[in-house]
Image 1 (cartoon, helix red, strand yellow):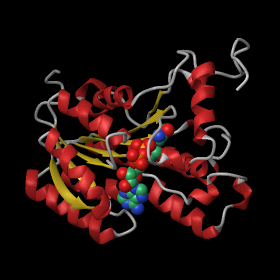
Image 2 (image 1 turned 90 degrees about the horizontal axis):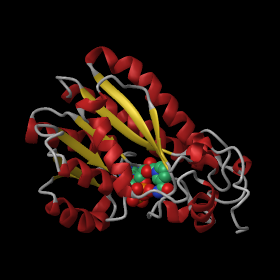
Image 3 (image 1 turned 60 degrees about the vertical axis):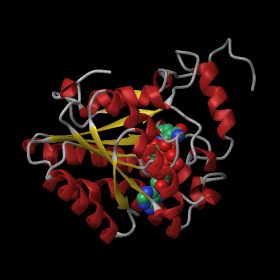
Length: 264
Ligand code: NAD
């Protein structure tokens, strides 16, 4: 615990349950003294999100489905009512039809391409538009990405294309919002077993592969992603924007299978 984030007000979007990366980030931000507000997607998740918010003394500012602009407007209006301003926003939202997170990318349908890019990439821009208005004294915006944006990964398919677009949007928004001292960064997290990840084909194999081949010889936890997120939304990282920071046990530097790794 520290006062690193004391006085900072942060909106965390994308908590689904206690395995969510957003929850790891919320806990870390809370430990460092931030005041938090959560959104949830739909009534089923509300039941999970409210008790988690209570654990951290966080506000719940309402239902937000990023395909519904009115619901985004409503939660930002709630944040303005609650705090009158905002210091950071954390975007942990992605979606693709499960049927297309297996097989070949080239078979992606137009409908799922459009939906995946809308929810997994454009939503961060849509949220930035609303957050910018509340970040009157500067701020920090953070999103979550994956190495499948940079290199081909089995089964990641259209999500890899969406993450590549998301990473590019981090750079464009960093340039747009920098003059207002609003910073925009992303964490590229290694694979973690969450609800969203369970939709990806052969996910257990991907976890195993990382355990054997990442420099740290293990996968990462939501706590570790949370600690890096606390840094990125704090003033310690005030000289950084447009950055994609890997929290992946070093996997992104590896160019070939570890010869000592067993066959899996
Ligand atoms: P998760 O299932 O806990 O969180 C995904 C969230 O996205 C859920 O809270 C869900 O409600 C939200 N969401 C989906 N569609 C939405 C919509 N239309 N409107 C509003 N919210 C919507 O899974 P997670 O793994 O914690 O995912 C969080 C982020 O981390 C995602 O961007 C994911 O791509 C990214 N990420 C995950 C991993 C991993 O291995 N788990 C690795 C790197 C990056």
